[in-house]
Image (tube, rainbow, N blue to C red; front, side, top):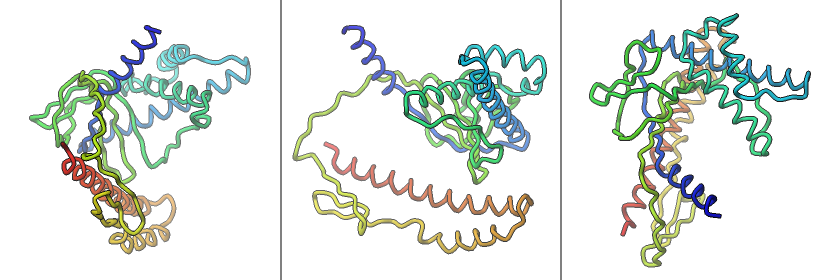
Length: 282
C-alpha cells in the first residue's frame, strides 16, 4: 500500500512538473533539407520495424522486443543502410519507442493496430531527446547533426531541464518545435470550492458561452470570413494536374488558409479562458 502511494505521488509530481512550450521555427534551405532527411529516415525506421515485427510474428509466433529491434537497427545501419548515419541516431531510436508505445496501446484497447507511415502525409515530425540547447538572446535552437542554430521565435522563456524536443512540419509547410521541460515544480493542491467565487459556464449554439452571471460571449465564427477565399482556393486546386508543382503550390495555399482559421480559433479560446480566469480570480 505504501509503495503504491509513493508511485502515485511520483506520477503526480512528474505530471505537474512537466510543461510543453511550442515555438515557430525559421530554418534556412540547408536546415530544411536536413530536417527532411530526418523525417524520411524516422518514417523508414518505423515502417521497417513494423514490417519486421509482423513478419517475425507470422513466422515464429514470437514478438520482437524494442531492444531486439535496436540491435537489428544498428546492424542494418552498418550493413545496408549507411545513409541512416546522416541523421541523429536518437531520433531513430525514438521512432522505435513510438512503435513500441503504439503496440502497447493496441493491446490495451486504447488504439487501433499500428499503420505504416505515408511518405506524402500532411504532417511530419521527429524527436531529439538529448543534446539540445536553446539560446534565448540570439533566438537560436541547437540540435544534434545541425551545424548551426535554427532561427526560432521564442515568444516566452522557460527554465528547467529539457526532456524531449519534437520538430514538426505542418501541412502549410511551416515548421514548429515543441519543447518538453521539467520545471521541477511541486503539484498545486486543489483549492476548496467557494460558491461566491464559482462561475458556471454553459456552451451553446447561438452564443459561444453564457456564464451564471448572465454574461454572453458571441461565437466568433472564424471560418465565415475565410469561407469564400477557401472555396476559391480549393476550386483552383481541383483543376491542377496531380503530381505537378503547381498543384503542390496550390495545396500549400489551401493549407495556409486552414492554418490561419485554426490559429484564429485557438487565439479566441485562449483569450476567453484568460478573461474568465482573471475576472473570477480571488
